[in-house]
Length: 202
Image (cartoon, rainbow, N blue to C red; front, side):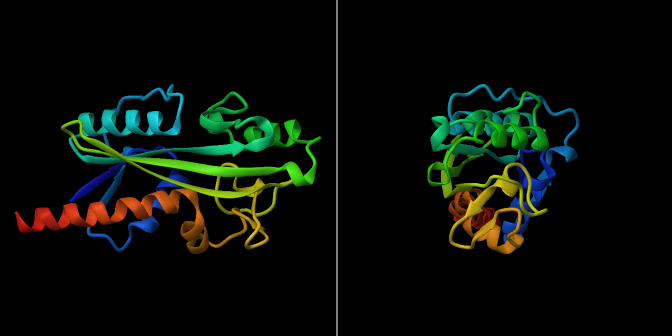
């Protein structure tokens, strides 16, 4: 059974593959499709964007498709960057620029007011248009400087108080266990295993 993970982000694909490693699924990425359509993420919520990507790619490929939209929600910034997390500084996926802008706009924010949360919504879509969503989130604090070389995105600035480390400093197995994406995906895994079992029996 093939599962298309609808992301062009290699870091995100690596995380999802590691979480699904024990499942009876063949995980494929967008790089294994020929000329997949570009999906404009113009939804007002993470769920809107995740559903749009998953349904578009499931219809295009004919595969069961998993897509997610995730981002950073900062209390002191009234929820920004939110759904615009990947293009906060203007260019899609420019981690260095996004982190630089976040540090700049939060420079005057006091330490006790630097609360933030990573949010993730995963959408599982069938080629017939059916779609289900699953959510996860993790709370933390925004650092005043980057720490760590792992992960991607805002990970070097997002400190997890429980561990006293940023997401970029945590080993992948710990990050997967506590992360917003890990939480959402663990809700999807039983559904995928059940689907794979139904195919084996048919």
